[in-house]
Length: 102
Image (cartoon, rainbow, N blue to C red; front, side):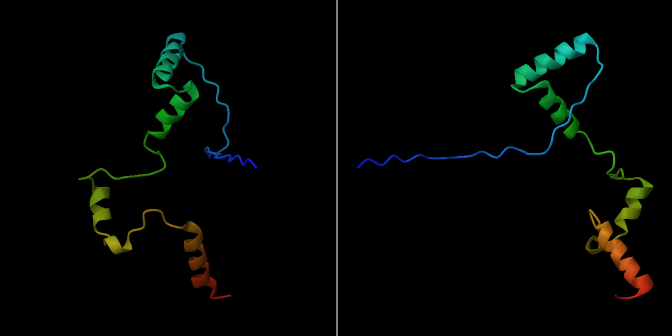
């Protein structure tokens, strides 16, 4: 009796849905993007995605050290700072304070 063992592996790729974005750019920029992507061994889409992902998020605000905003944030004790507040939880707590417990 012969038994063959088959090893099955499955790689999981990021399953986030991708969307199409059409850009109007100069021909020389298009060629440069293609060349850069080829040198890095990736598609132009992936190159663009990585370039954008590496940029600072415009929705996140980090005050510049030495600025008035920075100095104010330093007055908040570390134990009371929230990096990413849970707004749903804050809303729920505010409603409970206003209207009482259910």
